[in-house]
Structure formats: C-alpha cells, structure tokens
Length: 447
Image 1 (cartoon, rainbow, N blue to C red):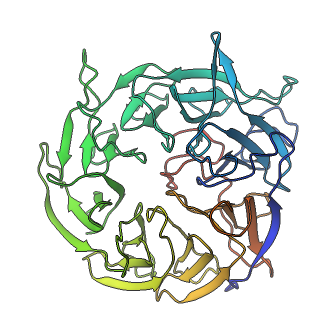
Image 2 (cartoon, one colour):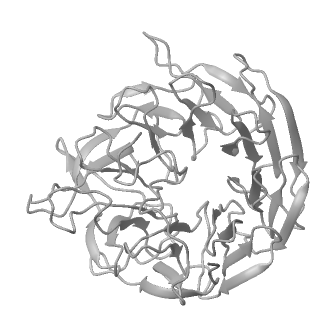
Image 3 (cartoon, one colour):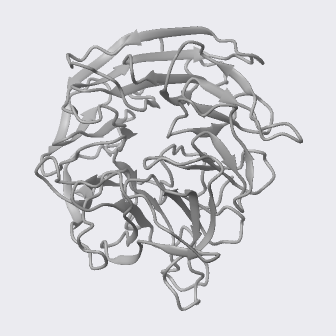
C-alpha cells in the first residue's frame, strides 16, 4: 500500500506552564521513552515516547535556558530544568544545546545529556514509583570545555557494555570520568560521534575530517587514526558508498562550502584515498553547508549524500555527481541538517528539511516538493526535524522545533502526522543528533 504525503498538525506546543517566557526552540529535539506510562514498573518501548528539547527566551539562543520533556501523545509537560544542584554546585543548561538520551549504565533508567557553561552534564530520569518526575543530576564534566551548541552523542565506544558520551570530540565514561580527548580541540566539531570504522569491536570517534582511537593505557590523548589533511572545521556522516562493507566519510567543510567523500580503507595513519570533492553551488553569497545526511535517497540500493546550504538543498550520488537540487532559504546559519524517511512506502526516501520559513518534504528521487508547511520559522543553527512514532500509534510523525524571534511562525514544538493515517511505521526513538538505526535500541539501551 502506497501512502500519501499529507502532513497535518497532530499537536502543537507553543506555550509552556513552567518558565513561560522560554517559548523559543531552535536546536533539534530528541525522542525516547522516559516514563513508565503503562504501569508495568519499567521504562521501555511499550510506553509512550517523549520529546526532549531546549528552549530560550527572546533572541537569547546562546545563553542559559530550560531543558524540557513533553509527552509524545499530546505534548503535555512532564518536567523542566532551568537549574539543578549537584554536590553543592548549581548548573544551568544552555538554551540551544543539543540533547542525547540513553541508558549509560544499563540500570533501566535513561540519562539525558546536554551542554552547560561548566561542560557536559547528564541527569538520570526518575525511577518508576519514586514519586518524583524531575531527573536528578548524575555528573557534570568540564575536562573538555564547553560550547552552547554542542550535540552530545552516546555510544559504547570501548565495547565493555557501558556507554560513553562524546562531547566536542572528547570521550567521557558513563559516570563522567574523563577518558580522553584529541591533542588539540582546534576545529573540534559540535556534532562528533562514534562509529566502527574497521572490523575490530571498538568504535572510533569521527570529528569532521579526523578519526580518533581511544587513548592507549596510561594516556588521555586520543591518537589520530586517519585524517583528511588541509581541511578545516567540518561536519561529517558515514556510509558505505562503494559497497565494500566498510564505511566511508562524507564531510562538509563549512568555510569553503566543499563536500568531501574520503575512504580510509583500513589505513592506520593520517592517510586517505579513493575520494572526491565537490563545491556546493547554490547562488548564495557564502553557501557554507550543514551536516550531511547519508542515505539511499532514490531507492537504487546505493547511498547518496544530501547537504543544505544557504539557498539550496542538494543531493550528490555516491560518485559525487549532482543528483538534484532545490531552492531553499537559510541565510542565517547556513548550516542546517535534514532527515530522510520513506513515509509512503514506495521504496524511496522522502527528505524532511526545515529552513528559515518553511518545512519541506521532498521526493528523494527527484527533489520535487511533496509538501510545504509555511507556519514554521527559525533563525537556524544546525537543527533538523526528526521522524519517530511519537504517540505510540504505529505510524510515523515529524517532530519540528520552531522559533519566531527572526521570522514569523510557530514557537515551540509541532508534531505532524498523516491526515489519511497512511504513513509507514517508525521507531519510538530518535535519541541524538548523530542518530542511526543501529546506535540505540528501542528501549533506550545502548548496543
């Protein structure tokens, strides 16, 4: 059965009871189960997923703000944190920090991780039956500095059954212990993540155009496994572009608006080979380019890469050939991301992309506009809409963050589903910016 691309608002949360002046949301929200909705004593995929977001007031998107959890069924507020106390010290979340959710230590209670002026912070959600709804502070780690817009990533990097948190290319253990960092954090990406780049059990940390191993025993310096030399700050994603069973890296250098595809191919030093480079051409005064999206856009069984720049969203084939491009508007950050999902079940993905003034749904094969929602507005950072079964009804929904300090439109969070209820099922979790279907289980545990 082929569904219809017919988005309609299922619920909208544009005002908040707690901290009502903080109604602006710009950074990408995440989704996971945080509460025991069915009363069986555990938090897992049988419960209703929840949305977690950071929010700001006015135009203060780089200041401290509020982190909030909303129930996925109707958007009612579960909890909000404007500050929390840990070991006698008060900490506040950044208002446009990225959020990552995962059960770091395997105790069945997810942690929620985000950026503060003091560094990485993680809080643990309340246990079922505890009588409290608000998470408690687990750790704050300042060993890697901070940034208002860091998007933490969670993964079991060392394959020991306990998760680590990647924050500005640094790695922290499940309890906040500092594991290691690169020798230099110059050009450290706010979207670093971990992935297995070879065939050993451990993961590597991908930071734009550099890949790091965990530090050797007795050291906290993460050695470079391989790097694309001469390239500056970049966003990255991985995929098997050449069908050899090993991942290649697609990277977007923001300063030059160049897209690189490079294949480490098992190299053990700062070596790269078998790649291509293209320059984004979108007619903008400074095209830049956001984090790449790697997926099979056109249903041909091979992966492509999509990139949003200032005035165009472009998809490149696995050999660097431009597959299609369509006009957009993001003269703010020029660094936004995107997501892909096969809503109608035809075997090809649709692209979900939000610029300064519209939410777009594009045909993954041709770039044709399948739907446009013009109530959206955003001053933009690197955000993108997520796709998840947010209300536990067996169908996919789009979860969108909006703000109106720079462009007219919604504030807060909007959930859109199919008016004909024909969209294909989605997972109940989208736990972090660097999300993939293999980096988190449906119950929030980390594989």
